[in-house]
Image (cartoon, rainbow, N blue to C red; front, side, top):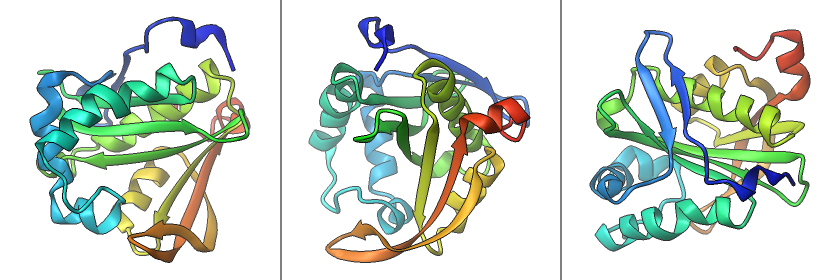
Length: 195
């Protein structure tokens, strides 16, 4: 991939459309209670693959193993999204696939932080960083058909909707149809991706 992985995982900074400052940073021990609260939320469980039996130990595993593991394996990055007070408001992963020029994103917003534009700003920042700094050609977003909140986030972040992938995602032992959208390198050049 790139020598960027030889350095510590970076902290990204962005601002929402409403002017709220956000930091996208590596997970810290103090994030575990926020991770736990977000991962036991019924809406999170409905739309993600977060384990149903999520507990404090799993939240610590996210902070200590899962999140730093992506960077250490040189396969992308997992960021905690923190507000201006450095409080956890969500998390976002940029995961490089078998094709080193393609990554997919996964994200969730803490229940108390929904509706503030945090995730669309974070998604835009992560996708643009992946294209510019990691040399990605394509960043893909998928969500189960019906997850309107996630689709609004992707569209607001500048991802172009591409269609429905039949049986495109696994969810608790079943295959579900998925919406697919992407941001590609050319979107940044033509200005279609929001800067």
